[in-house]
Image (tube, rainbow, N blue to C red; front, side, top):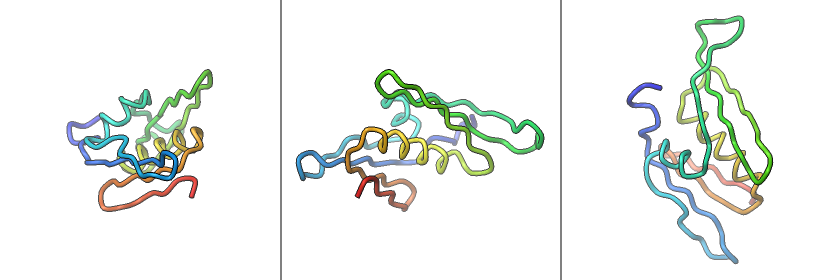
Length: 105
């Protein structure tokens, strides 16, 4: 991982009995760490010049491996957080790099 990857600012909100609650505010890499999502940089099997990321998402007793290629770390990390939050089933919103991702609305 480059020094600058994962330094993007992120805000994560979820709804608790109809009230919006701030769950996390800070750097993207810190958010992944707080949720227990591990990530590594990987290479494609056939196109060796294509860089990707592998995310290991653990929810309860289940573990999901998510591989993504050809996009930035920030977009891949938001996708991994989206998968994590969808598995939890709560309404949530992710604000990262002037984009908004709404989950379970």
